[in-house]
Length: 197
Ligand SMILES: [Zn+2]
Image 1 (cartoon, rainbow, N blue to C red):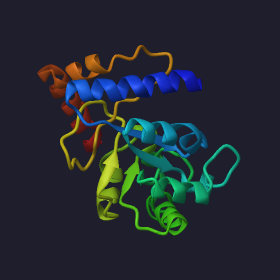
Image 2 (cartoon, rainbow, N blue to C red):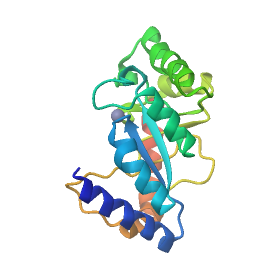
Image 3 (spheres, rainbow, N blue to C red):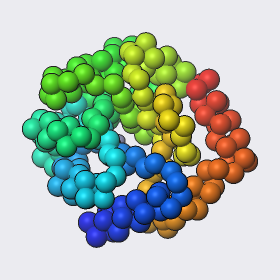
């Protein structure tokens, strides 16, 4: 997404959230350098909460955040969580692979930022019964999905609205849709089916 489009989007989202009476958490997966170069300053300027979910296996690589960047983001008051190690679909992994993604990645990130880490964002939004069970066993306090919708405070698996540059953005419409009983029923059913797979 071009920088200009992103800045316009974030400003509109912050204003719309205030108008709609919802609290906005802007979250960024993958640990791209633009997190600290573009997103963080804008969020600070607009007073919008932010959460960053880097992949442990990409820290310090070209175009990705370095360890010092993660500590700086944390120092700015942003949440840092895990997006796993290698950006793979967790549903496709064996037990050793899940351990690497859920435990080794978290440990590596904790050592990098020098603090315990409590949340994760699931790559590709791909989960099933086994992944959720492993995440509960690993004591993640928050697991960010890619299922759309609004959240109650303290939700264990928050929903997220993804935004892409090629989609029209109307935050008010998203909020209104999220509140519709039929939307809530359908997304709840989808989530239930996913978590039972
Ligand atoms: Zn990702």
